[in-house]
Length: 122
Image (cartoon, rainbow, N blue to C red; front, side, top):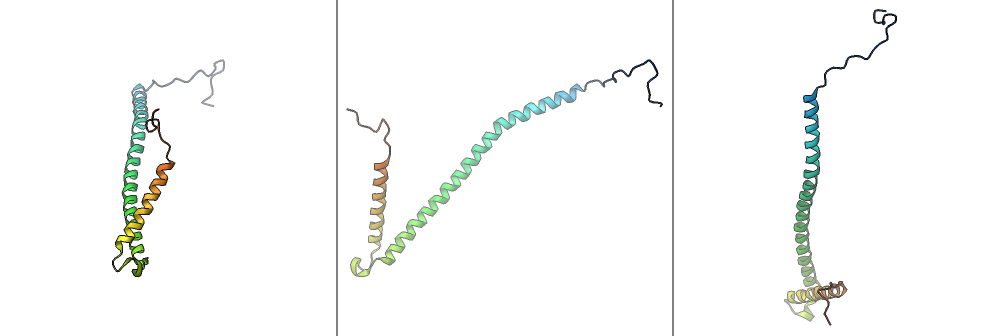
């Protein structure tokens, strides 16, 4: 009963401690700096990761393409008959693969969609 209010008096508002404005200012500054950092370094990190991973993929892809072409030349060299192309017929493997690549390139070139600059003027 020691905590009860005396009769006739109502419990008023409890006194609030003085506002801690230095802590609030520091929190506000920290929040603003964090927001700016997230909006600037977030996209920059994403772009940097894209450049790094894209470069890595291009290097690995180029190496795989070169190895695939070497494998195709060696495979064709083994498969081509000596009776038709002679004893040394690596040139024939190069010729066959070259013709295949030229034909694929010509087909893809014909299927492209020309831009206005590529179209002839009348």
